[in-house]
Image 1 (tube, rainbow, N blue to C red):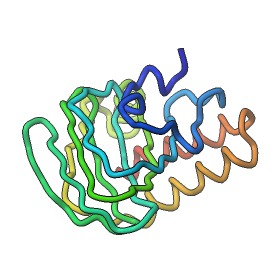
Image 2 (cartoon, rainbow, N blue to C red):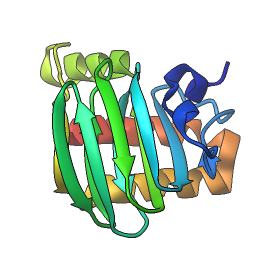
Image 3 (cartoon, rainbow, N blue to C red):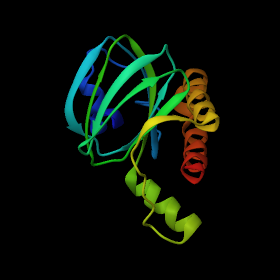
Length: 168
């Protein structure tokens, strides 16, 4: 079973990722680049924390996360944060292109303990439009690393994962 299969969120999409970190031996972070038609995604629960970055055109996104509903007009560069083990449901009105960065909850706890002295680091769902250029650059850096170096990119991906968690 691949790392993304353990995640299961990509299984609800009609098209497989354009690019994914499956087989790249990444341990604490996974990457998937999607382009999907207008779609309603039924409720699911992901065992990974997910950061979703809009890398396509503007799209109207309806989200229901842990019972909290929010409709946003997402533009390129916007991101959203979806914590692990929360119910999630989505729909969008036109083709959507996005990166999903998946972080292991145990990795977040380890970094929390190492950096902040507590393993109780928590990601809060962020459903409104959020713009963070550093997170955007991290997404594109992971994509480029995967395209260029594939299976030899695990050390780079792990380093980037550390920086991302500390930044968040």
